Image (cartoon, rainbow, N blue to C red; front, side, top):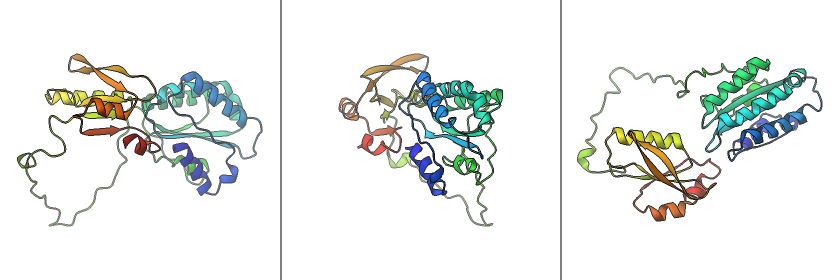
Amino acid sequence: GASVVYADTVADYGWGHELANYGEYSGAPSTEETFVYAKTLLSLMLRSKHPEGKFLIIGGGIANFTDVAATFTGLIQAFEHYAEEIKEHNIKIFIRRAGPNYLEGLRKVKAASEKLGLGVKVYGPETHITAVVPMALGLMAPLPEPDLSVPCGPPPRKRVDVPAGKGKAKKHKDVAAEGPGIFSPETTSIVYGLQHRAVQGMLDFDHMCKRKKPSVEALIFPFSGNHMEKFYWGTGEILVPVYTTTQEAVAKHPGVSVFINFASFRSVFETSI
């Protein structure tokens, strides 16, 4: 998905002939697997020098299942292994990543970069997914790196100036008086993806709103067998079933009317229909 977008963007800028290597990892690889993969890639980059140096772009969209902190720990181990050679070969590294534990992962890799003197540029979801490509190619100045002390917010936007006398607030209809809409206090959902943080946030909100039952009835995670996942419901705990297929989840929970899909844009259609 995103890796293809990065390769295409390099080609779109007219640098396709300089694209020496293209790689991709997904599916929640372990720290060790990421270390071996990154070490292999770096060893290939270090086989020969380029008079103008080289660029390594590590980019991705918003990961669904991949723990960014875990994979970046493996990446850092590879950086530590080849730190002196990376500097000797003048390899500039640009990172743009988001997903589960992304903030911890970006903090770790930035701290390692400063310790090793690698000068890695680190960006999160506040930066457009392909913005690191023209920065790496020298086509634009590097953007200021984000504050990693707090989660990122939405990109800043300029307020729209409304001419005087216009833009008066309209009286809103009383939706509650018109009867139930798409959602009601009884609405429940199925979540595609093992998104613990998102589901727990929904359950916390449910409990705070004094819902009688959780809004999430089941999860779908195709990479493991059917099992139960534990979540908090107020001060207590509940078990939410996890299925491997959408078909089974829907069949066992016929009252569900909302499907929340965390799949990537590569597979969102086929996993929803």
